[in-house]
Amino acid sequence: MFTVNKKLGRLNEALQLESPNCDSRPVDELSLIVIHGISLPPAEFGGHHIDKFFTNNLNPEAHPYFKEIKDLRVSSHLLIERSGKVKQFVPFTLRAWHAGESLFNKRNGCNDFSIGIELEGTDEIAYTDIQYDVLQKLCACLQKAYPAILTQNIVGHCDIAPDRKTDPGASFDWQRFKAKLA
Image (cartoon, rainbow, N blue to C red; front, side, top):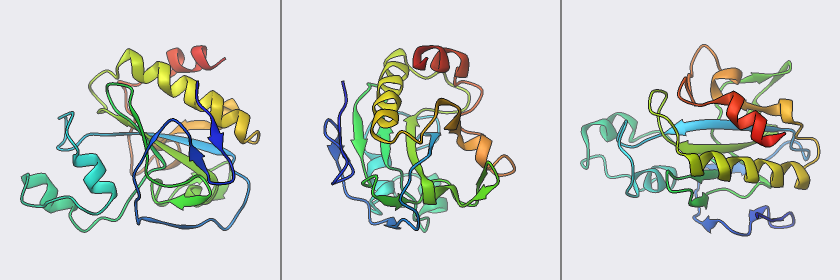
């Protein structure tokens, strides 16, 4: 069971890590959840590379790929690791930098009105059972806290930036996720 402290914009059960990659929201009402997939290095799981990436502490010398992304400043509100552990990087009251140039229901700039949830994974490797369970419970909790987030407003990064992004990818079972959410 998850609970949200709306005043602080915090998921009470998440490990709290502070990302500087956020700013004020121009709108108050949250109406969208964007599901992402991430692994660092690519297709490798575990460790703290994602944490370090979202907090601008990733060592570019630790892996050749990290040199390519060392200047990126991105974040997400939440990360669900392969184990099901949940971490929060940005309060829901602030705009995380997860969606980039994006469009949903004729509205540009999805970061303005969305919550970004990263799943530790790739487009090609199946996500874990516990990630689906945690994601479903988490989305239900967020929908309760923010009633404008309708089930049809839970989408992938690929849906809001189809020319740029493919995540959470073909490995994400939308039918399974939506059936559990219903």
